[in-house]
Amino acid sequence: MEPLKILLFISKESAVYNFTRRQVESACANALDGKGAVLEVVDIAENPEMAERYNIEALPTLIVGTRRYIGAPTAEVLNTCLGLNEEAGK
Image 1 (cartoon, rainbow, N blue to C red):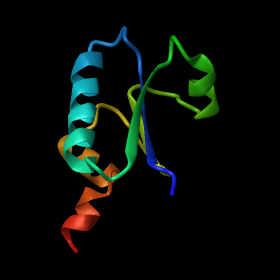
Image 2: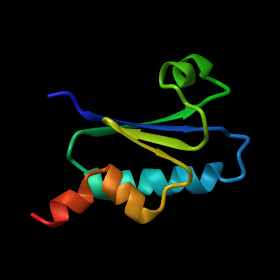
Image 3: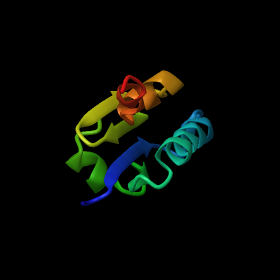
């Protein structure tokens, strides 16, 4: 089974770059440790082709599987995107 791919599209020029990156990295590390997930942080200035391929229209954009969230993700949004809220009910 292929690991879950998590993409964070952001710009290093953004005022929220460091905060958002740390928040997403921390949530992924804590929640998905050992679950086969891979986080890739994509700077759109360095990789515009990838941003175009994923139709990125606003930043930051977080893509987890088929889920997409636009804006600085809160802890609740991260949990939902990573499927943690669904697991909590099981």
